[in-house]
Amino acid sequence: MKRINAHKIIKGPTCLAVILMLCFAATSCKKLYNLPEEKEFLSPNINYETKSFYPVLGRTTRFGSINNDHSTTPLHFEIVNPRYGDGKPYTDLFQVKPTFIWKVLYDGKERSLEEIEAKRELVMKPLMEVDSTGLFVLWNTSTDDLVTPRSADSIDLVQDIRYFDVKISNTGGSTIIKDFQIIPWRVRDYEPSTDINPYNGLEAPDPSDPKNPKKRDYIRPSFMDNIVGAGSDEQLKTDDVNKDLVVYIRRFEGGNGHNLRFVFLDKDNKPINPDNFNETKWDELVHGFNRVRTSEYVQYDVAYPIPLTNYPTPYTSSDNAKVEFGYSRIGFGGFLSTSRFGLNFKILTQGDWEVVFHFKRENPKFDNE
Image 1 (tube, rainbow, N blue to C red):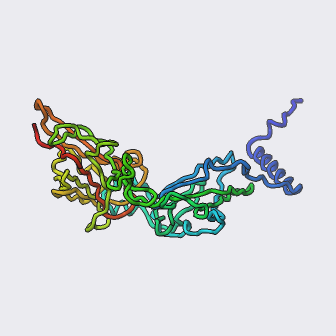
Image 2: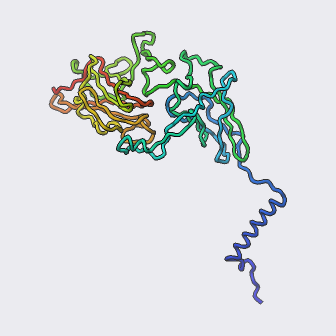
Image 3: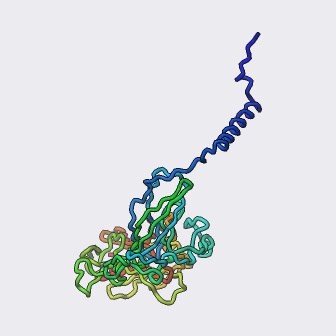
């Protein structure tokens, strides 16, 4: 008689039935013997790399790097026990304000302000929060009016320092990481901001002569190539000693609330006609619209902040906006001589702003030889 191998006949629907019976049996055993449900893992060593933060008010900043030490995700994060160094609670960082967030990716290809604005929306958010990944977010709605920045005299008293704890949890339990501290800098509307004292917001002193009240520091152009002085025929330069070309980023009156203007000044503080910069690609300079060009400036309608996001576009370099201005002339020997200069920058606060390039000591040479 031929022996039947039992395992060979368990197949198809029968096999499925057996599997279901085994699963049911396992479940029944767990219920019968009151076995505990499996819990997620929450490591006792979960922590942040640093617990002291110094963000700048008025700009969206994400900070805080967590090491979850193989804890089961997702984790839930909550800021708890906000207090000053003397134990007094504070609430200013958690005021809720309308905040722009992106609902569609900004990619720099938008063809109007309206198209840009349609990609973002206002939602109510606290000035500071912790997100689902454990990152802290200070939103650009934070201002000096709402949150007192660090001391203007650079002395941070313990009773003025803000502390907080973070509660982290999953179904495996919870833990509290204590004694984070945040000491915010006052608003700086733009970068580079080397011309501003970060403590008091006033003009920064000249680093080479800091005690001289008649001297100040400036923003320098990011690059400056082959610019010859009209009188000296020598290369102009800007460094710790020489200030042949400096930059101001400042507000102006009379705009529509979202203008960006580029101005060029000679050594007598008189406007240089932008037509002199004949190699400049004005249509590709910034992600702006409705360009206006006069004998004194070139202006665009723009959306703020500049740049709008960290997404790389033709108008950015790293996470900065970039602008380049150039001009050409016939040099010695009949050769074409090309000069250029530019700036990598940010403007974080909405308004009407102008970026001014000032040739302080000597005017650039535009004439042919």
